Length: 229
Image (cartoon, rainbow, N blue to C red; front, side, top):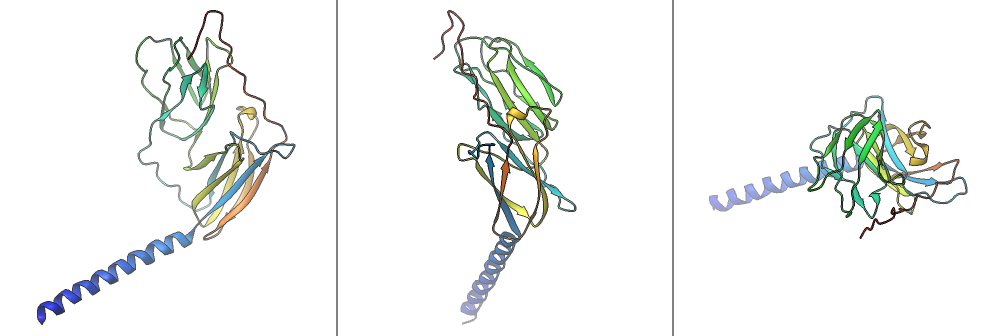
């Protein structure tokens, strides 16, 4: 009898514990909101390769970076892939060469100046991007090859694809500065900015209207005698 009572008591305590955990998770989810952002060009068409990011304003704490995964920008078919990359400050990027010809990777950008000279075997060590800002990466041997890296102090960011839309979720309740940047803006033109108040739960829609139509990416142009797979 006492044994059964003891088991029932433990089960009841476990049930109360699980209920408390569920309540905490539900409460945390209720306190988190987000934004649904769309990027449009001057003709109203949806824009790809737009980096949209949110920075807390006021007393909202910025989450710690923690462990950051290494990112890859490949040299493939005489192009950098992906064309646009958004990362958090402190992230390392690898630049493997999958082509059968040589490349000479270099950046002159103040946010991260670096160089990966022509190499024969293996992949050079990753490059750590330790300052926020726009980094433009070139191949010194093939002038059309270019990649853009947006280095951000905030963890709340995403890049648009063909749909022109992204969602930034898990934002704590409060005010955020939302910015949108496209590589055609380079390092000089400021990102589009909106200030948005995020409430608990739900996704708040916003739209960024750019005053230009994105330029088409330059196609690869192998030099005489060069072949790529």
